[in-house]
Amino acid sequence: MNDSSINDTRKAELLSTTVEHIDIREFDARPIIDSMGKMSFTSRDLARATRIYNQMLEDKDCTIFLVIAGSTSAGGCMDLYAELIRSNMVDCVVATGATIVDMDFFEGLGHKHYQALEIPDDDTLRSLYIDRIYDTYIDEEQLQDCDFTINRIANSLEHRGYSSREFIREMGKYLVEHGKKDNSLVKLAYEHDVPIFCPAFVDSSAGFGLVKHQVDQMKKGEGYMMIDAIADFRELTDIKIASGDSGLLMVGGGVPKNFIQDTVVCAEILGHEGVAVHKYAVQITVADVRDGACSSSTLQEAASWGKVNTGIEQMVFAEAGSVMPLLASDAWHRQNGGKDREARRWAKLFDKKA
Image (cartoon, rainbow, N blue to C red; front, side, top):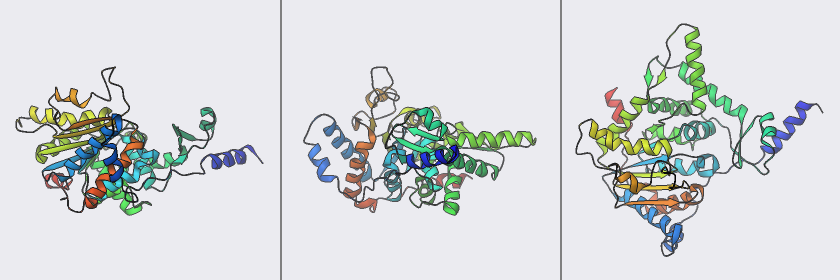
């Protein structure tokens, strides 16, 4: 057996067990959340956060923003987020490029994430073209297929600036036509007119494909499409202005969290004095507050900036993959699978302006 065959065999061994994404419909977390509400510490925090999310869903005037940072999608929460869109339990998504491209769009193309049953030396993983997220593996060759698919989508578009929302909508359209997974957040968002924003879009596999697009076009002396980050901020602020009351369900923090919170301030700068701060806010994070960050401040601290309401907010200091399934399952069952909630379809706001 030659070295290539040995490597192929070893790679197949390491990529033998796929991550199975949790299905919040298969279990009813309401009794667990109710019991946790009678406890203390993080259990009670989670129960209160879940009650706040249910309040958002029951508030007929509330637009709900799902904000995702970190790697929970790769770790098994991907179908959870997709179900929230399918069940009309979120109205807009703000996320990292990795969440949307490297994880969801990647699986939409038919690729998988894998459980690391052992953690070999990372140099060995590199030699086998395996990327590691803690105890989860991705096949780098499959990820490059994602890069080149992004490149093909970019090559098919008119040469102009696009908000990340516009480009991700094109990705959703691509998955409708060519995808291999029905339960994709990007695909479902396209079908349900739920806009997705990635304020740092090129910090992902999309970046490689878009750079190649730009370089190839420049070599030909032709124009190219580009991602307009200012349009991202403007469009997301447009939704906040039009939505009235709003609620934030935030997993992690960082740029997506700060981006959605800043829409309130941006609306004020644009002269819309009556735009309310975010009425509800939940953040699940393991970040620490002592360095002044906590993935861009605690919710109480954000109130001093005029971004959120101090009355209906809850920080939950926990690893999101272990608590989001409980929160989401409780809400899904308590809200009849979202059947009684009116769809906002905020993506149509921009169709009218086109």
